[in-house]
Length: 276
Picture 1 (cartoon, rainbow, N blue to C red):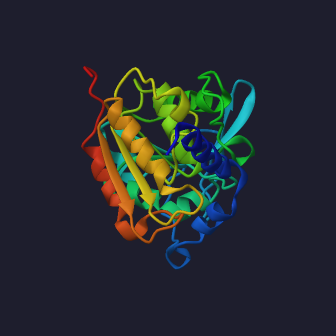
Picture 2 (cartoon, rainbow, N blue to C red):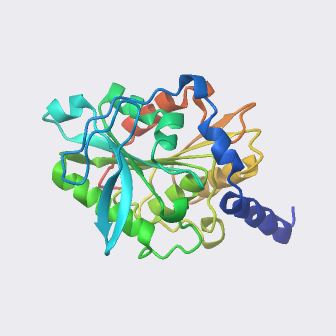
Picture 3 (cartoon, helix red, strand yellow):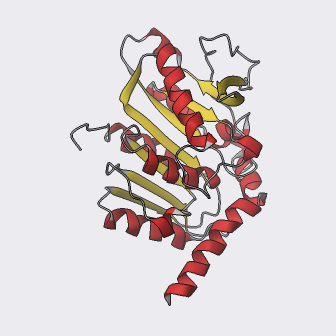
């Protein structure tokens, strides 16, 4: 494919992620029969409280004078443990917020309960993560910085095990965030997204972090070629990559491929190695 056509294909597909919400909404209902959220332990702060069963209460954090929302799942085993705990940031898709949808359709809270790690679901402004301008001073990256610092004051976090995943628009943001915070984030697992502007500007990370790329072969919103190109770019840049391409899967979370367990095995075996 000629370079110009290749550029157009990537930009057009990436733009769809910012302009179409239908697939993200469908993803929320993909496993509707099974959508039982994990038990939640209230955050130990004045900003949050426990909700009714089946809900994920809204927590807030002031970031540069603006109230930012997030949901937090802290397993009881983490509260009772005296060991530092891993933390997973999960970024939602375009026009999907973290109130109930992201925890329900990913079931990452249940995964945290099972394996003993904290899961945080940040909420984007206007339900869309900024992936156009890679300026690290932008609000969403500042939100991540502030949220990690705040949770680190309230919980005994294992700062060698800070992990990031994201779905769709959240996956694009996960790639961007890791490239700008590679010395903080141990490993990432973008799901159903691509490199976005990093495809054009280059990954250019200070540290070569491990990446697990997950994508449905039949994804009609973000074409599978986005994932393949991200894989190739990461490998070329010297990153360790685990690539998971799921047959007969559209723009949905890959439960059929047991992706949560596979994702956790990937994270668990890839803590930060400070000498990298």
